[in-house]
Amino acid sequence: MTRTARRNRRTLQVAGAGAAALLALSACSSSDSDSSSTTSDSSASASDKLSGTVTVFAAASLKESFTTLGEQFERAHPGTKVTFSFGGSDSLAASITGGAPADVFASASPKTMKIVTDAGDASGTPATFVRNQLEIATLPGNPDKVASLKDLTNPDLKVVLCDKEVPCGAAAQKALDASRLKLTPVSYEQDVKAALTKVELKEADAAVVYKTDVHAAGDKVGGVEFPESADAVNEYPITLLKDAQHTDTAKAFIALVRSAEGQKVLTKAGFLKP
Image 1 (cartoon, rainbow, N blue to C red):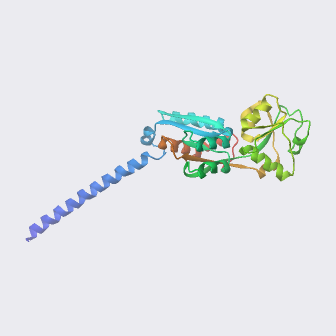
Image 2 (image 1 turned 90 degrees about the vertical axis):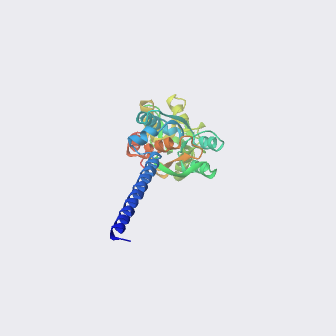
Image 3 (image 1 turned 90 degrees about the horizontal axis):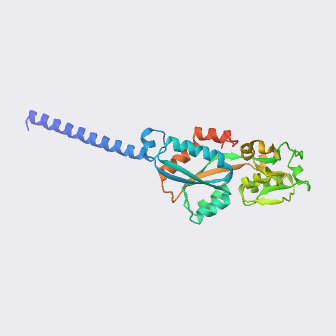
């Protein structure tokens, strides 16, 4: 083979290698583009591709903050919609394992989240996104002068607790046990909002609820902190559900909840950072 022929052959080899590299780079870029479209980043390209309705099952205490986050999400991602079902975490978990259609579950305790994960209905590992602490809700102005958890044992007071199977009820019982106090409420309510409503309607003198619920009620109730609440702080986990219909959009909502922007809304509502 002549020198000229060898040189021409090397030129063709280099050109062929360059073309192959260009094709590989193009394929890689395409793959990266496809991958990025499934993440919940804030880029315009990813945002434009989010669509569909996300159904979120969330603990009752998250109602105000999650409603705000849902509205923010819809504004940031036109063409999406976030719908909520708020209630006691135990009831929501039972609905999910019973086949109720939902994309995201945000629970008020790891125990109730475990109902869903044990049933194999979660996708991935749940992540704690906030914590919440108990507080005593009283009538406006605290006319009964409630100053401690022990004061709630006064038989002349009508006190309401969440059901023991609900995270706020389990936390209240934990605080009472830590204080070696026994309390007989006039009723056990199905979720924290129902317990708070009893005080707002003056059907009860006090209720053990979350700080966030006292905060959300404004001047409809008074709030009394008590040290035993530190022994019963609840962690709130959130997870994507296995049968989510719009996975990318659901993941993006979870990302918003866990983002700095989401945390700002949650801490403003009285939640503690995870």
